[in-house]
Image (cartoon, rainbow, N blue to C red; front, side, top):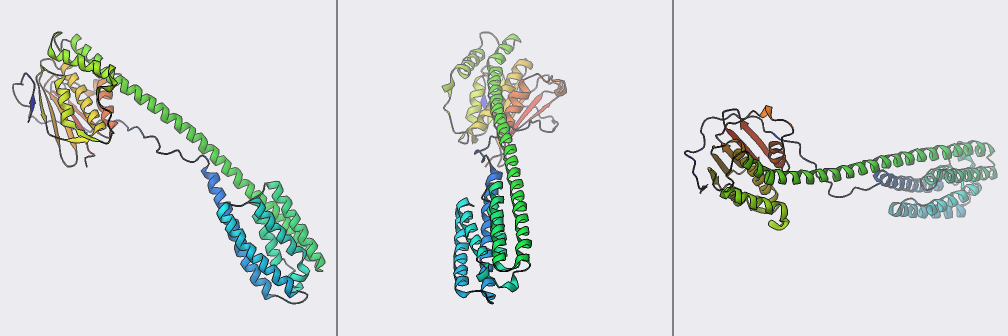
Length: 416
């Protein structure tokens, strides 16, 4: 049922056609992130790669080494030392894999691995057949290269290079003891080169990761400051809206002669303004998503205009409390403009909803105005109506022209 004011307008709302310009809206304010992201994502990702990659190549190398070592057993290879070496290295490959995957690459694991490799290098005379030593194709040569590469992921660059040089020296000594002087020189040089190249690659990736994390940390800091500044601006805008829509609006109406100094509407508005500004507990704090009655909120707005020729037609409707507040306060700001700028006019406040949207209209048959002529510093329409509706995902459409009245269309389209 419509809720009439004390004075009824002489007729219903105008039925003449209205133009339908594009909705006027402002860009929504992005919400703050739900959770603080990690401070070093590149470092964490790199640590994961540094765990998986060495574990994978060391485990695959262990299986391949065992297979190749047992396949070539020509003298002077001795069966017992070879079998012992294969068993120990195979078991160690599995232990290395599990420890690295579970705990990341660790220096103590790498040192044990290199100690076993150095032992195998020094014992090449009884572990590797002389026929497969030249060219660095023996299983001990492959094992030495693998240990050098994996060591770089766990140690500092200098320590990784030094350990690589120790393994290269052990291989050189082992090859000389096996009577392969040429192999000792050539493949030891290859192992030294591998040490420097692997250490350089790891150094570059670590530096790139640190640089990426530094940039991300700076971005986080800037983003946090932006969010704080945006929140401060929003609080300031909210305070400015409250001040504009209460005391300033009421005083302006009195100054323009829109209300009599002793009218019931002035007393009601002044009382409501004081509660808004000085009584923070004037309304229970609700969950922003809690559903409330929008029609009841709008009836409270209508009471502020007691004595003005205003007719309200409000369908029952429930929306989230934050949406109800925004729509009701926007409608209140629109009605204040009617009283201030459309003297001796009549106004209508409508609320209706469909399955897809809630629509509130404030209509008057006053003088209207030119939207393009509104200066940018005018606060009422820009902040009290448009920005307020945008803050809850709604839109505000102003349909007016000089001499043609005004229709303010408020819509919130997230109805579930």
